[in-house]
Length: 308
Length: 308
Image (tube, rainbow over all chains, first blue to last red; front, side, top):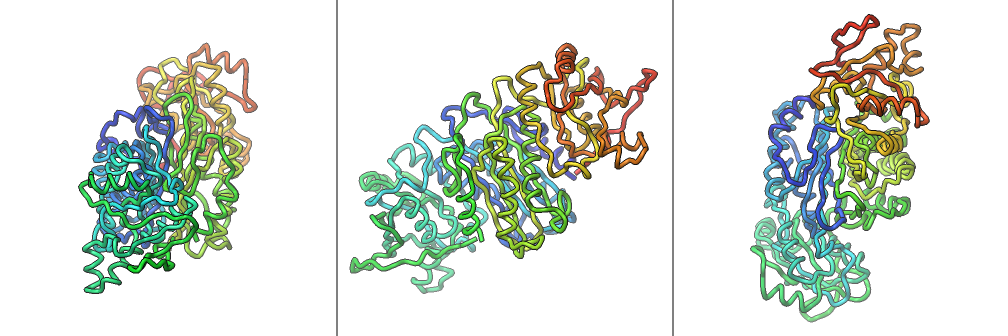
């Protein structure tokens, strides 16, 4: 199986200027330029948890396997460089496809996304076994001259901003989202950012993590949270339920940023992206996650979200 | 599960000078020094193919998951830098352990090997699902000033050398081998090497790959192949059967090198390693894999080995 697949792969992998040596040797070689810091991230998708072969097109599954990792590079404001993809395939295939055709379909889904973000596919490992489909992608990227964007740099008084709208990813884009790589690079170049991450497990849970990593508390103005049309639709006419989707659904793959007030003001005025940028609250001294009522009172906010 | 495991991990991961940012953010950051070329390799181990949870200690499985990748870095003569480890765990655990204890045992096996080779554990992803244990490790290393060792640099007339002895890995060291990282770096520094790889699928199959990548044929003097004691034992008193083990068993994780005759002579005279270095044949013009009879005649040699 693997021999045939590697043959297919060699015919379909585009050349990449940073790829000094592609698949076929014991390892690949990638050349860095500029900053000597390499950002590395890995995400594992499993059948039954992250996708269902019987209902999800394997091309979309392959796309998602890269997309979630690209979103992590965006979260670090890193420039994508290369990926390796390891796939454990059910020996008899799945979704009506043989193991080989399944591997090909996964790559047919991920290759266009890789091309869109100048991400070299440096190699991988593709094995069959008696088990469900598991895809593990590891990406690495390069820190730019503006430095990496971590979760821990936030300070009390920082404004909290999010890209796009939140909630309802299940009926919207949990497979087909476009990772915010370009947006993160653009914002890091133009504005002073203190901390950032991507919203993968839900705004409330992820914000509680950013605040904790920064040694701060976080206050959210719930009426400012940009609720997606999909979340509203899922919730019927119930605004409170729609907000819960926006706070806890996860898989939004939007950016959450903490930045100084003047930089936030400039960014909100400029609105430099194709998607909205919204201020949803601020970091405060202390700890914990808080909601601000319309009367200004602070109440605890539960860190809802997707716990693995 | 993952939250508890990450807590365990943070308490047990040693600091590493090259690790600028460890697990806990959206991605890790590793700092390179010297050459800007990064070597990347990934290997996936699956239950039922590469190990059996019911009989193999998960510590040994974890060790092997890193070891096979370290062997690939050795094959490139690259200095180990960092690893990310993705694990898909059976929801109910396995081998008598809960999912969490299984994850911990895997790491208890891989951490000492990582420490031995100055390999930083930069992060990972650990999820539970309804399926067998799958471990995917991705390692990267740094090319040294002596350059990467690829499969394609061999030339007709090059001598073929192997480290150690071959065959019988199943009863010997398919889990507990020590990857030849130090040996590869030492040899690359002291001798002119044209091509190299690690023997993971069997000498005959792997040599046929090196020869093909170098655009050469390869001739093996079968009576010079260093047959391991384990292979002899597996074969009883049958020398021909023992040789077949040495040619085709795989998982030897020894180095196979192609180098100019004078460098090979010096290396064989010096015997600079703790393990034997043996000349087993040479690369020739043309193509294919050949055996040299005691009368000097060339006969085809089958590229036996482990095909995935």
